[in-house]
Amino acid sequence: MTIDRSGLNRRQYLAATGATALSLGMSSLVPAYAATKLRQGYQVNMWGMPTYYLMKSGLLAKHGIDVEEFAVASGNLTMQQMVARQVDMGTYAGPSFIIGNDKGGLVAIAVIQNVGKTAQVMARKDLGLKSVSDLKGKKVANQTGSSTGNIWTDQIAPKAGLKKGDYEEVRMNTNDMAAALAAKTIDAMVTVEPYNAIAEADGIANPLQGGDFYSFDKLPVFMAATPEYVEKNPDAVVAYLKAWLEAGKEFKQNPDKVNNVVYEYYASKGYKMSKDTFKTALSRVEVDPGFPADLTGYLTNHAKILLDAKKIKAIPDWKKALRPEFMQKARATA
Image (cartoon, rainbow, N blue to C red; front, side, top):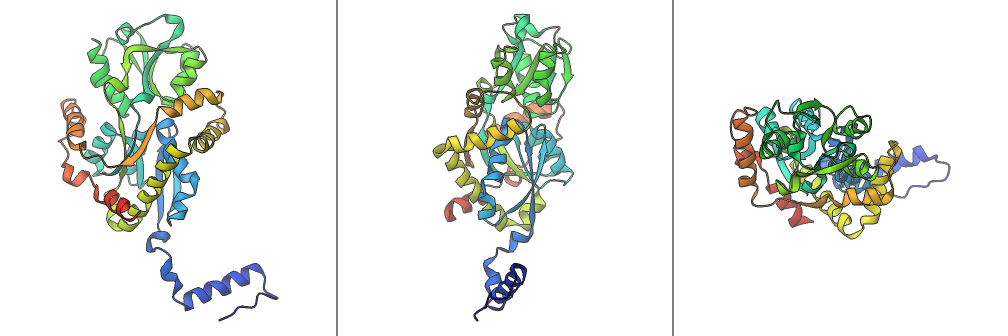
């Protein structure tokens, strides 16, 4: 069938060509999951920027995934949205994932990146503090309930000899902490990039000895999903992970392109930082989408800490919580 475009406006032409495709059975070329919009959660700190880049790269559309963005201050808020079934997928570190599994049966379909180098305990430079133990009696900003917040209260502070009550915990979103330090309403902050790099470059804060998260935990960041989404859309999950594998290559092979996309995001939000400062912050995110084989032991250690702290009811069933088969299929068919 030949369609004569003469005399047809664009809408009429598209309608005609669409009808032709249907008559030829070409609608089968469109993935069945394309009609399902993926509700993607992400945090606006550096942990969420690989996901932000994925959404802006065009790779999801290439693989037939239509996405709706849900931006929040930190990953534990995305986790809470997922438990409430307001979002289908989102990234956060192990402690938040374990809590999400405990509260809402959330499952992990991949590890996207390691972010231990992005997290740090920082103190106001004018106070002259040197180590975490110096925070006794100080006001410490913490994103309560987040993975970094849990690691701070359950591991880093106790190792430095600080117990609850030795310092004043100030509950605050990570993206508000550097400004609070500058205003001297807090003495220290437990936060992540790019806020650490900004505070240090501006002479507001300095890192504290014993407050480097990487020495405690490489902090793998999980892409979690609701169990309903993966059961209803298994092919979409595989296609989604194929897009992630391609994005991972771009982080390694074309870092300048990635840097520019993410830098423009922060610049559009009014953040003032040099490209060098930003590049340093983003370089601390180690993007490598996959599904490591040794996750059970790592997560069990975190789960035991959370169980002892009465933050979860039981150790998760890892055979149900960890779903490596989707990444295996994505790699096999990439």
